[in-house]
Length: 169
Image 1 (tube, rainbow, N blue to C red):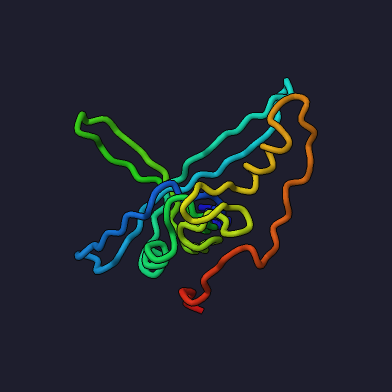
Image 2: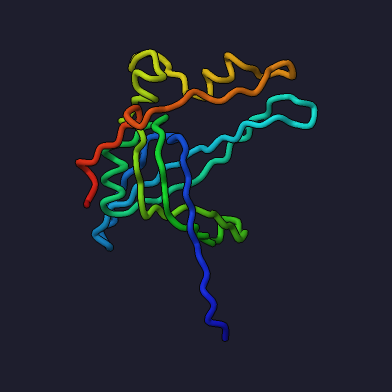
């Protein structure tokens, strides 16, 4: 038997796909929040065409992280999630074996206020669709083979909203 160590750690920064669904589990006397986040990678393919790939991640947050998600996260909010992968297996109604992989959130840090979508630095206001920093970058610089790579706009640390009043420390 091996006594080697291993590590199951995930760190994601992405946008919330839908408002968190909060459930109280009476048998455990615990709250759980379930939601998804999207992470997007933008790159140039071999033909110098801009490509964008988005990965969706299922997030499960328990207890105070569930309460934090309920209070601070809405669809579109940028969030940092740190946790671990967990795979669930079950049998569907047709008897087929199914699996889903989710992130069990150990840490959840909103990078914006709920519904802010970048605040005054990137958006046009709470009633209008806000642009993310990368959206502005690609509107100015591409996509297209003639687009020249440039550094994305700088974000000042003061532009990132973090509500420390809900942190347990």
